[in-house]
Image 1 (cartoon, rainbow, N blue to C red):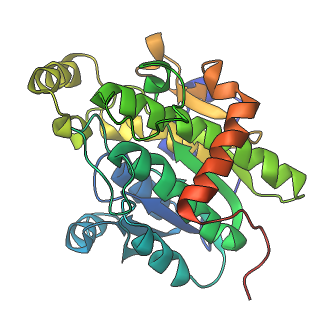
Image 2: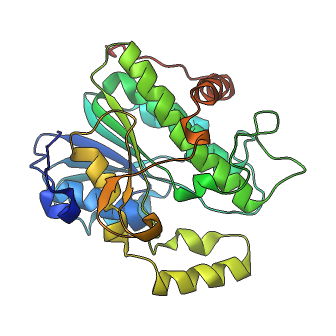
Length: 304
């Protein structure tokens, strides 16, 4: 699926190669950058599975895409739903895009009792990726965020649910840091196992989507709405780092984001991450903890 591009300063969706015969899963593909990425992959010839919590909304979104699409139910806040989705998969899967996410919510729990943002953004995708991994042939792209630098900038291993110390921003930052540590450790394990599959991460910069409308603080919602009008790029531009990570010939564990001021907008390029997001020991500890919490283990063996 990879394609080498020399001039990345002008990279856009027209640079996506022919993906005929390829299959991709995009979580949260019913709206925002997830839909934009799924639609472009389908336009390029891939068969794209819209993995969504609400199949009706997923079908409405898929109907707007040009190409081969399919809708399957997936609730990342429910590990039983994750297992059901993975158990229903048959055959090779070229590309998994872990895109779905929630942002700065009031204090809530998943069906399995995890803090909602960590449970949805990280643990649900952790379980999904590992359950599908025996089928994956090319790469896993996980959507992170520049917000991984905010909050406390650490994983609260002794209090992952942030009980008694919850703030929407801290929880969101922790979940996005977890996305990057997950990518780092997944790539290490894939390389150690001799697998050709690559793990990469991307972030959209500031993209105007409906994600911000669900934040807990009404003042924060108002400020984000203003930022969406003044600073943000649209969802199609916000999806470009994801697509770049999905089709370009990049090293494993690469992190892609917009190349403009503050990484808020601009053409996709390789970007940096915080020291905490590069902490190999923390990545391994998070992986072990995630296995314990989800009951899902790493395996690259081929499913019969």
